[in-house]
Image (cartoon, rainbow, N blue to C red):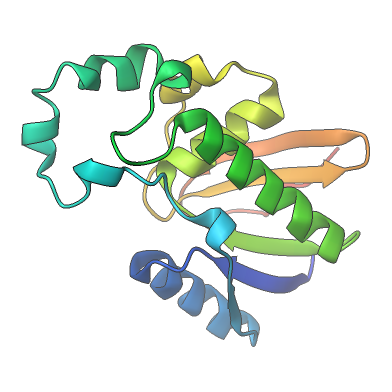
Length: 160
């Protein structure tokens, strides 16, 4: 397994907790990065999912996310751009190194879709489970997806 040089997390508590356990095991400290935050859902913040699912906008979230903006929040395109930009910034800060970036399901799915060259409207087809590992290697030549949604023990994904 390659040596992990840094652990980053979204500032939200659930990602900080996960990143904290990883960092502790590696003898590192967690660095917070707002670029790893989940989508800003604006006016939907604090609403129960069962209520939001009954809105006409809910279908758009799943069928045409690239054309949707959360009321009072950001669009999926903005979230994907922010996330991919944060990962590129972190890559440049750690050339040739392995880092861990702990984020949220939709932001990870958006990063995977970007790395695969898959349109954002298809990103809901990617499954990201809580505490799963998705490994993407980034280089000047572009990203390569090594694994998606890995859970459990096993060898670290490596480029071939």
